Structure formats: structure tokens, C-alpha cells
Image 1 (cartoon, rainbow, N blue to C red):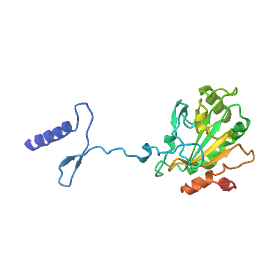
Image 2 (cartoon, rainbow, N blue to C red):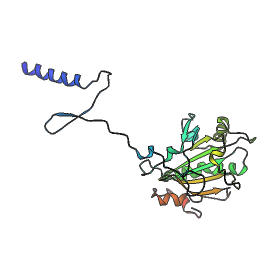
Image 3 (cartoon, rainbow, N blue to C red):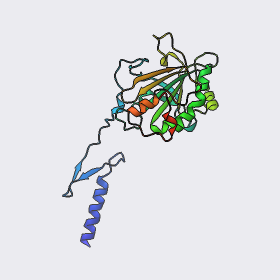
Length: 238
């Protein structure tokens, strides 16, 4: 009887000792002898929490600025919760996050070529690039009247073109366009390396006959992305 009581008491004391005053529980580690030793929580040192240093810019070989915009994550395939998106969401210096290439698309509601491109992007994303670890982000800069884009513009774009990747409003416009390049046009596409967030290629305009996004396959292959699920990505222009 005494042995049973002492074991129960020991069990009770251990149970009480694991609870802190605020109700949280602490974990302990035991060595081979059965003694317990305190362990400090591991420090969160994820490398993607520190965005790369500049020089920042929107031209080839520059580090893409850590732009923060409001929009939808995964477009129509997401929760459709209006939230903050940032370039840091795609930064993956070690590949641990599974991001192998980033495509940033600058569009406007009034832009005819942007509309043509928007028709193809959901299929490209689902069938070719998403399975290989690419991330897409569309930044809408203006509405049909040329005024700054807002949530309503993004909502209409998603509904019309079934955008199934990240999409946001960029009401300032110039956030995604180079101020020093007077020849820019839209749609404007930036292909960014998620390892260092440098721009590796800039595409302007659109090709209605295109079956791939120029430069994106090259970026994926360079970073050792998983193989394409189909032969559709083997075309020219990658």
C-alpha cells in the first residue's frame, strides 16, 4: 500500500511540476539516467525572414524591392480573404519553402494585351509552372478609366479571368514600374530568382501565340525545380 501511495504521489508531483503559473506547459528533456534538464526554446532563425540587401530596382540584375500590397492569396482558388502580400512571401534562399522561380505580372484593367495575357495565365500556372514550384503575382495598377486600382478592380479581374494565383492592387502604379525607363509598357513581367530576389529577365508586351512564358523555364531549371508534369513546358522561349 505504501509503495502504491508513493508512486501516485510521485506521478502527481511530476504532473503539477509541468504546468506554469499562466497555464502553459513546459517541456523537458531527460538524459539516459532519467534526470530532467531544462531546454530553452529554439530561436527562429529562418533565413527567409531577412530580406536581401539592395541595391533595389526594377531592372535586370537588381534586387526586387520588398513591395507590400493588399490582395488575395491564390486568387479564386484561395479563401478570397483580402490580406497583405509582400515579396518576402516568395523569398526562399535555401529552397526549403519550395519556391524555384517568381513571376510578377504588372497589368491594368484598360490594357488590351494584359487581358489577352490574363486569359492564358491560369492554365499556364496550373498545368506547367505551379507543379514545378513557381509563384505568380499579378499587380493591378489601374482601372478601366486609368485611375488607381483598388479591391473592386481585383475582384473584377479574378472573376473575369479566373486568376488562381496571388493577385493584388497596386494603386500607386509606379511601385512596380521603373521610374527611370520611359519606354516601359504593360503587361510587364519580371522573372525573379527566389534565392537572392534578383531580377533575371524582364518581358514587355505579350505574344498571343505563346505557349510558355519566356525565361521562366530557364529559371526553374537553374534552381533545380521538379520536372515538368507534361511536355508543354519544353517549347521554345523558355
